[in-house]
Amino acid sequence: MQKKGLLHQVIQHLCCLPGVGPKTAQRMAFQLLQRNRDNAKALAEILLKALAEIGHCQQCRTLTEHTLCEICVDASRDTTTLCIVESPADVWTVDQATVFTGRYFVLHGHLSPLDGIGPDELGLDELERLLAKGEVKELILATNSTLEGDATAYFIGELATKHKVQASRLASGVPMGGELEFIDRGTLSHAFKGRRKIE
Amino acid sequence: MQKKGLLHQVIQHLCCLPGVGPKTAQRMAFQLLQRNRDNAKALAEILLKALAEIGHCQQCRTLTEHTLCEICVDASRDTTTLCIVESPADVWTVDQATVFTGRYFVLHGHLSPLDGIGPDELGLDELERLLAKGEVKELILATNSTLEGDATAYFIGELATKHKVQASRLASGVPMGGELEFIDRGTLSHAFKGRRKIE
Ligand SMILES: [Zn+2]
Ligand SMILES: [Zn+2]
View 1 (cartoon, each protein chain N blue to C red):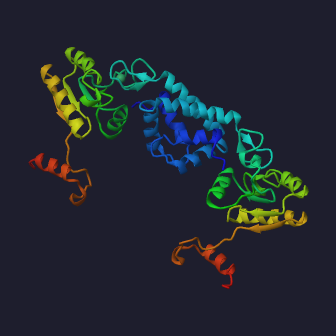
View 2 (view 1 turned 90 degrees about the vertical axis):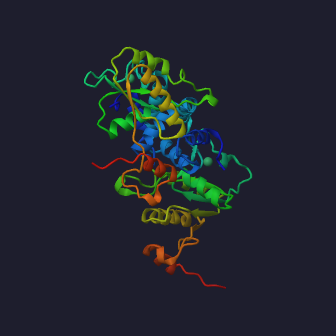
View 3 (view 1 turned 180 degrees about the horizontal axis):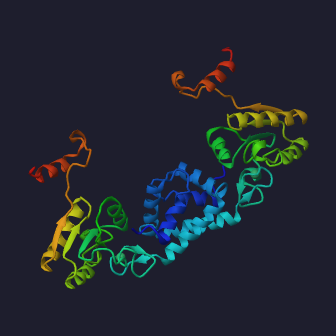
């Protein structure tokens, strides 16, 4: 068995990637060290560079290697609507899926008092300073549709009211194409309560 | 859209990993740069170290950071049988799946004249020198069960004969638990021709 040494260490570290088990990590390691050496080197180098240089946008807290991210410096975007999301990945998801042209604010998590994550850890002090400036007229609360996401949205909704900013929450309900039979009870009960009149 | 810059480059390079599409690469990148920064750094560093230090075992040609791999230096292994495989990954596969206690020889491919891969590229000159020493008594040809793997095994079988070394090929046929209905025709025809008397 050759399961010690450098090769094994490479495999162990690849195993920490999301969705990568031992078999896949082994296949990746062999490919990186044999057929794909140039890409392996480039991947390692760009990863180190990214780790060193990528930080948080000073305005919206998303990941960027600049002081302000590309969305925040984009003069064509609407500065009166702000979409609140839990993670930088959500910024991409919302931007790819919707026609939203406003800006974002990234919480990097949700309120979780037991883990010591309160308003300050989510940057809500920064958010309040932003709201106090008066330019933002509407908050779209796009935190996850979980207990924690809902609680966080509710809390931020209160801040919005305090600053006389309108707040809305993403509609929750049956996903498009979802057959009722396969929808979980929580979602269905939510969708039922949130039913809309057909006009 | 934030699809430029360092983050995008990290995603592009992760996309080259086997079985990793754009969505997975995006998820990996966010995880590496946020929750998993320590592992990301360790992964990048161990990868660079492995690329710099891992080469081929001077005896069996498998991947190792030493002059001789762990199997070749293991005095408890039988030096009279040599298992010929196409790739270093195959060494692991055979060693994990079987009770083989001999040594290996890694071709790093198969004969493919159109791609300029002849006997020398597969290290068959080294293999012949090894056979000429007279210590190896049996070759187990464990190249893939493909046209190219078969042709390569046949070619090496001839070398074995020339050096008066016994050669055998892995049995090919219906995989264990395989239902005939779902076996491809080539495998089935092979298994039929290679049928064995029950004694
Ligand atoms: Zn920003
Ligand atoms: Zn070796």
